[in-house]
Length: 238
Ligand SMILES: *Cc1c(COP(=O)(O)O)cnc(C)c1O
Image (cartoon, rainbow, N blue to C red; front, side, top):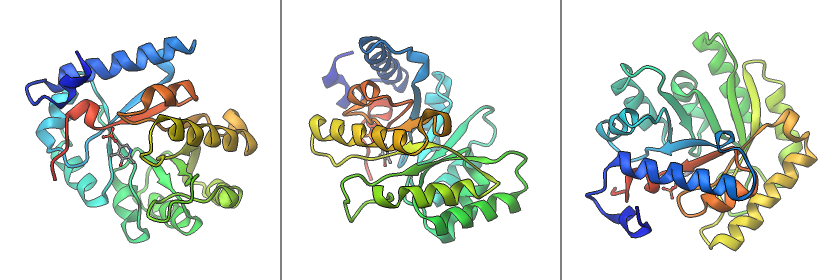
C-alpha cells in the first residue's frame, strides 16, 4: 500500500493495519532490532466502537484513548471483546483518575506526583488484583500547552510513583512537537538519555514514542511501544 493510500477512505482498517505492521517490521530490521520488541497501540480517539471492532477482527488488541469519558464509554460498549487492552495516553486530570483506574490496562501519561497518588488510591479502591502499569510522560521541550513532567523534575516524580504499591512503573513516554523528523529524533534521544540516567531499562523497560509520522525514527531510537492513530484508522474527523 502506497503512502498516499493512507488518506483514502476506501482503504480498509485491515489493510492499514497490515501496512503499519509492515512499517514497524522494516524499521526494526533496519536497525537490527527484533520486531516483536515493538508493540503497536492503535490510537482510537474519535473513532466509533464499530471501527475498533474492525481493527480487533484484523488482530489488533491494544487501543489508546485520550479522554477519560471516551475511554469509559468505549470500554463499556466493547466489553464483550476478550483480550482487548485499553491504554490511556491523554492528559489526565485528578478528578478523572477514578475512571481511568477502572478501565485502563496501562497509563502512559502520568505527569505529576499528585496524580500518581490519586491514581494509586483509586486503583486500590477498584480492588484490582495486580498493580496498574504506568509510564511517566516527559515534556522534553517544555511546551506549555502539553502535558508531561520537566526533565529536571523527573527523579522526584519517579520516586513518587514507585512509592505507590498499586502502580507499577514501566517506563517513559513522550509526544514531540510536530516539527519534523529531526526534532522528533532529538526528543526521542533525550528521553532515552533520561531513561538511562534514572535507572535504565531494568527499572523502566518501556519507551512509548512514535506516531504515524515518525514511527521509524522512534523505533531507531529504541521505542518499545508506538502509538499510531491515523495510520491505522485513517484521517480523524471531529
Ligand atoms: C493522537 C495521538 C497519537 C496518534 O497520533 P497519529 O498522528 O494519529 O498517529 C499518539 N499519541 C498521543 C498521545 C495522541 O494524542
